[in-house]
Image 1 (cartoon, rainbow, N blue to C red):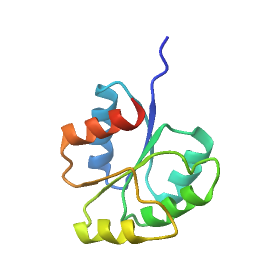
Image 2 (cartoon, rainbow, N blue to C red; image 1 turned 135 degrees about the vertical axis):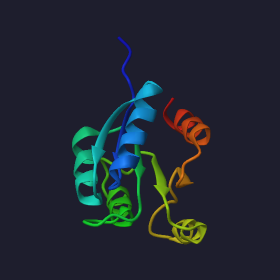
Image 3 (spheres, rainbow, N blue to C red; image 1 turned 180 degrees about the vertical axis):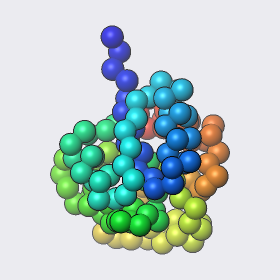
Image 4 (cartoon, rainbow, N blue to C red; image 1 turned 90 degrees about the horizontal axis):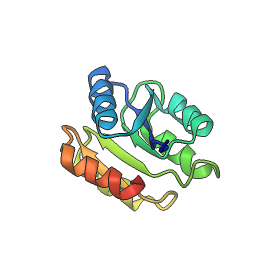
Length: 126
């Protein structure tokens, strides 16, 4: 039996979690969910997903802190991260200028363009 690629969805908006989960599962992926950056980082370390979608603005711990933690940890630094956020394009430029961490594998603004997201995920993990 073929191994399905696993996507960790880190998102605090229940509607977006539901949409992303259904979208990825309908396209042949398995999903797991975390609702803040702290739990997301712990799940990434424990479950070793093939890809992470990461919201930026979350209450308990931001996506930025989680992203930095992923890059500072050997077991998670090579997992591709796709940022999905309602934050402005200026934020994308800010992230890309940071010298401490590499830019994310992709960046999508909400509302997400489905075909673009699916094409990027397929490009990154198959």
